[in-house]
Amino acid sequence: MYNFFGIALNFIYLIVVNLANQDHVYPGELLAPKFYHLINVIFFFNIILVYLVSSKFITRKRNDVASDFEDYTDSEEWFRAVVYKDGAVEIVDKPLWGKGKVYYVKDHRSFYRSDLFAFTQKLIGRYGNTNMTIDFSIKLEFDSPCDKKEIFQYLYQKHLQDKEDGQFLLLDNYINYVFKKFNDKLQPKLDELVTRYATREISEPYLLDQAIEMVTFPERIFSNIKNTKLCLNNLEFSSCKGVDCSL
Image: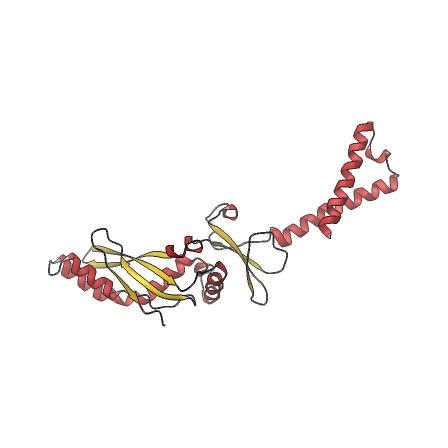
């Protein structure tokens, strides 16, 4: 209703100005002075109202999750989610006309293709002052396609428990956190393996085989995950395993 009124008022004002220009007179000379003055006052307040409405509902303050990313609101790599007061979540791609916190969240390629739901992780083994990095890939397998709303709802709940603002709203960050939480305890054993490899007690294939056996990712992040596959991210040696996602 408001949009229709504003458009109609602007249209009438433009007609008056156009007619005045054609007759080479001031717009006020075509109308009664009081009526013309009233139109100007209404037009002025209409501009203020448009500004207030756009400030509150469209250009509201952002709840950024990555302040170093410029112009991301126009990028396909980001989507907009709103959390209402009752906790309901909505993914929006249009101006928002409702009360709630708006979050701009980095889009993951997996939102478009479930077979690309993969993440790169690494473990670092130490021998003296030397570090050896072992790269892994984590692939989440689903019973059914995953959608942005389910992903954001889960990450938002984790975000509420997080002390660092916005960290868990980025899916990659949460995957990193889970991987680190379950595999940090492997550090002493990994250091031992790297030491044995450095002193030539074991071969590289054996080291990598032991590493893939140790590493885990035992957490069901979304309800429709059926399995998590862990693989070595190595050009020369390839090995994968599935892990139980019942936890």
